[in-house]
Amino acid sequence: MHDVVARLSGDARRAQNLAGIYSICSAHPWVLAAAMKQALADDTPLVIESTSNQVDQFGGYTGMKPADFVRFVHTIAGRAGLSRDRLILGGDHLGPNAWRGLPARDAMQRAEALIDAYVAAGFVKIHLDTSMRCADDPQRLSDSVVAERASRLCAVAEAAADREAKAVRPVYVIGTEVPVPGGAAEALASVEVTRPEAALATVAVHQEAWRARGLDRAWERVIALVVQPGVEFDHTRVIDYVPEHAVGLSEVLGQMPGVVFEAHSTDYQKPEALAALVRDGFAILKVGPGVTFALREALYAMADIEAEIVGQGERSNLRKVVESVMLGKPANWEKYYHGDEREQRLLRAYSYSDRVRYYWADPQVDAAAQKLIANLGAAPIPENLLSRYLPGQYWEARRGAIDGSPMSLVQSKVREVIGMYAAACRRD
Image (cartoon, rainbow, N blue to C red):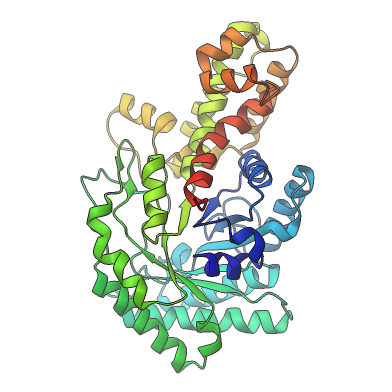
């Protein structure tokens, strides 16, 4: 793993202290600032990834194109005091995913433009995800089709790196058993671990596709394979990692020199499970909804504090504003949250898939969140109320680890999650 982290980060000194590396998949500035503070505290590189639906050549749901996202992250890093050479920017699920409703020819053309824009903007870690079928594809794509499409996108990435004279060449993540971005939409009882022979076959068919396109040198920069180690979450339940179920899969890494496994949907895993995943070779841990879930917990707890100490006419009413906006703009949750009115209301607020995250940039929601921060920043929050609503942050403030300001509370809550990943990735 040391070699993989060193190749990914270009920083052998910092890499030598890591057994694995985590990747923050979020575009929320407060989450990213918290992650940067964690990286500064740990003296480690930091991987930040945007997904293909968040950021694309048309703007994605964040309104940012790849170059915009790079500037956005660099601005936050500048404020946090994290040097740019500590940042590793990645693109997650890059491929035709966002255009699956189009014929494969059209979807792949857009995917090529997506890859070109990401590499030109300076993204280094490129997850090539061509695993999902397009409108005129058969129900299930063969590994050979997935690999051929991935190699086609790799060729685009290499050409973009050549054209832009990139000193740091892209590194690639491949795989055909790719979990659905953002967690499962339906209730789960279990998930099937990738079969060892399937992992080996995936690597072999991709290597052959790379060779057929003359991409042998690019193949040397394939650092990870996405597999399913047996972890997932749905709206209300987490499927925990069971090391015994993945023994056979872990063992095949010995036949894949220079490659580790990348584990998606590790959100909400127990700390000991995260450490076990890294130990077993799933050395790149992806986390997305888990960090914005913590952000939502912090903000909603602070809204409860606000209701205790701020007059009714001056309150942000954050929770009511979020609920109103989600009801008025249901496109980001109504296909996913089922049940009666009560069940849907609870899922809108508390689902592990955390589809609230799509609404933080909404002007009404953002204004309410900013007002909440301003209201609670106008006077010190009584520490006994912190104990009631944010007990972890209460003790952090009591110990002097944070100053108790609203933003310190938010970042502390998010770092509770990120800190578990950081601990799992440290070399003992």
